[in-house]
Length: 127
Image 1 (cartoon, rainbow, N blue to C red):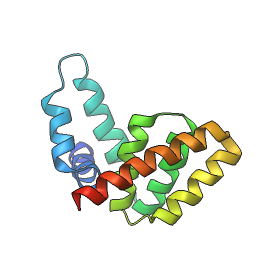
Image 2 (image 1 turned 90 degrees about the vertical axis):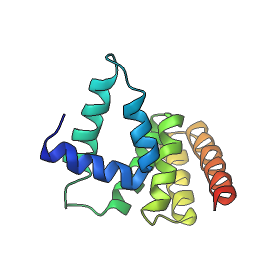
Image 3 (image 1 turned 120 degrees about the vertical axis):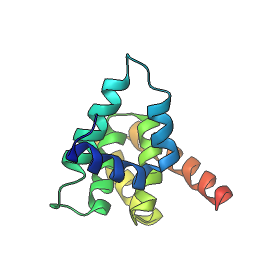
Image 4 (image 1 turned 180 degrees about the horizontal axis):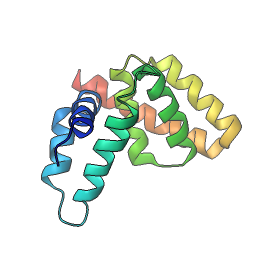
C-alpha cells in the first residue's frame, strides 16, 4: 500500500514508536493481519496524528488517558515510550494517570502506573 496519507503515517509512526518496532510489525504481518497494519498506519498515524490541529505531545497525553481507561496494557506500554519521545515528562504522565484513576477507576490507574514504571526502568537501562 502506498499513498500520501499512508506514507505520512508511516513516517510519524516510525518517529514515535521507533523504526525497528514498526518495520518488525510489517515484516511479521501475514495475510490475516496485514490489513490491520495498513489501516493503523494510514488512518491512526497518517490521517489523525498527521493533522496540524494538535501537537504530538498533546496527542500523546490524550492517548495515554484513553488507552489506560480502555485497559489496553500492550498499547499503553508502547504509547508511554512514544509519549516520552514526544516530550511528555514523567510528571505529566503521573498526572494523567492520577486523573485516569479518579475518572476511570483505581484499577485502571494502578495498572497504568505499573506499566509506566516498567517503561521508565527499561528506558533507564537502555539509555
